[in-house]
Image (cartoon, rainbow, N blue to C red; front, side, top):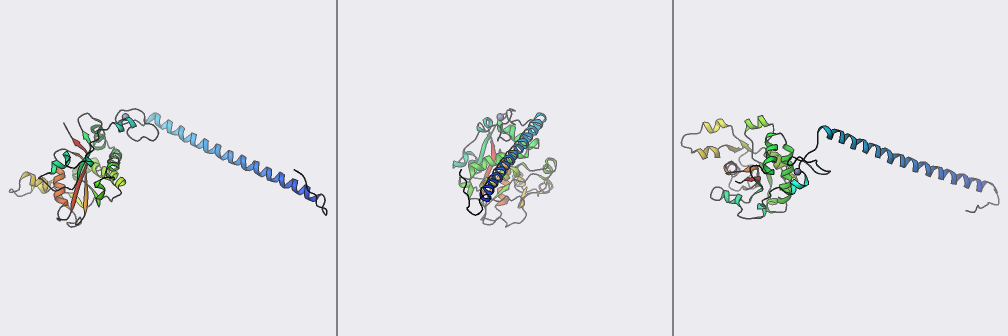
Length: 276
Ligand SMILES: [Zn+2]
């Protein structure tokens, strides 16, 4: 590059230009080195965190709860293969499905579904067993989200709120959590509706023992649930959530309680339906 000379200050311009160029180039090199150094440090930190993860994994391996193979990056609780193979029912898009039929002639239900088939020895039985008896409540939320992904594009998304079937207080004390509440929390995240765990409550067993004799046995079951505020759900459409539906008696009792006021609509979604 040519140097231009000023006629008045013959030497100053070329020298100043030279220094400016040098300083600029030194600054450029410094910045580049500082940038590379930051990248290396980031790399070192991320390698250290990967190393730590690997170390922890040696003692607490992250395994699939169904088939015990190592989980890959991005997989949670269940490997992709097992998740894909879960026995889904597809009932949420089928009017008059077997879950809806269970309530026919018993109680009025808007929509009803169960997301998976529950059979002795199948993957869903293994997972629900983990949720209920091995403290793995997060799997309940995970499966609830899987169900919610189906429900959000269906008629079930019309509901105003999600209510889990309350656990018997004695069982709650023993387990420390209500599995249906965790499943419901997962559903709420996907369909973007509020979770209500306060309005529907389970009455103590003592209540049913002190029933008058003229009540039939099923009436005692029906009396097992109640509302904290009787007209709290007036004009609302409630989505009732449970883990497994077998005879539907518990859900029927909950629905009776929820429909304390005639203008409350109820739909039902359970994680699974027991089948032989
Ligand atoms: Zn697996």
